[in-house]
Length: 272
Image (cartoon, rainbow, N blue to C red; front, side):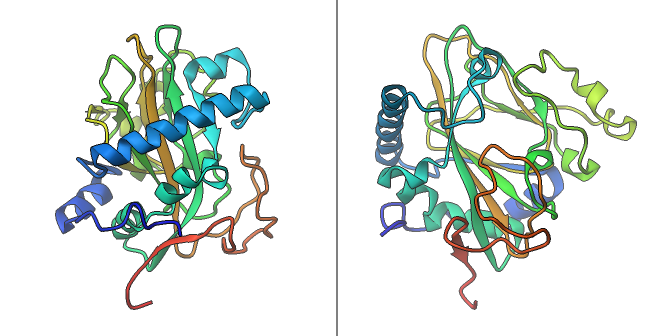
């Protein structure tokens, strides 16, 4: 059964919840142990080889601009038991539930992101929420490092408090170039735009609000930078028609609350 391998809990304290609410992200050390990280790396190796062998595109598109930003494979939890165990784990889901102060959280989708070395591009500054078919703004992402991440290999950067600016214009991540963050932000958000650089060890992670501006530089090292991203929706998130890389999976009506086996509940408050 999914969730047994990654059982147990990670104690999120009130101070971390308040930090997340104020800044739109939080960085958490040592959420996974070395054995758990190694298991996900092995599963990712298998998925990459299967993708090549089957000549399938499990991401948004295969154009050169996008693939130089990263290789993206979505909903790998549906193909591999090792990823299902992780993605549906109560340990990760409960962190998301605590940070959103929600009665429960559902999975939106997962994605494996690999930034290959040398010939790579930066992931432009952007917000995630503007690409998601959701009416509400509360969804958040867990970005789990499967390698030690640094500025040199493309770690995450965040603009603290930028989630309070609300939804802004989306960017074409494959062709954004070196988009100037300050030109993307409204005047009121420019003075405080001082990035937090989230360097961290493998097995550590960040959670960030879908409206928080974030960025990852190019990978200038000799080794791939691997990460596993899991996106969660708090209770009461409703569908809004919007084209997305995972497609119209649930065939939901506009205004309908997300539900069903494609969007499983990952963590629920004990009194629910």
